[in-house]
Image (cartoon, rainbow, N blue to C red; front, top):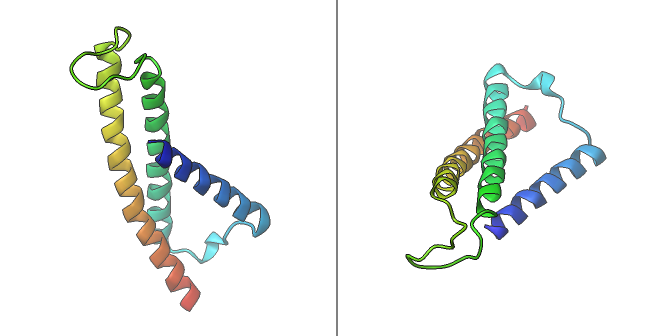
Length: 114
């Protein structure tokens, strides 16, 4: 999980650096379909980050980490259930973000060839 957070953080830092140094891409050349794919991609990324934040907030309530059937007294069932649900949401959003990133990349290649 820490590696995932580090990779997302690295991506966000690199994206902000790219925008500051190079600027935003001119979206006037984008078709409606590629803009739609981009917006869906951005929504998936946002959903993944929000789900990860909710999961992290619930995890902090678990108390001491323990393996096995014996749970920490602070680990409430509600927190565990929410953590499990948002974890699944984050995984699905991450897969969808990866798939839509392929569409965004394909659109960039098409525009670069024009």
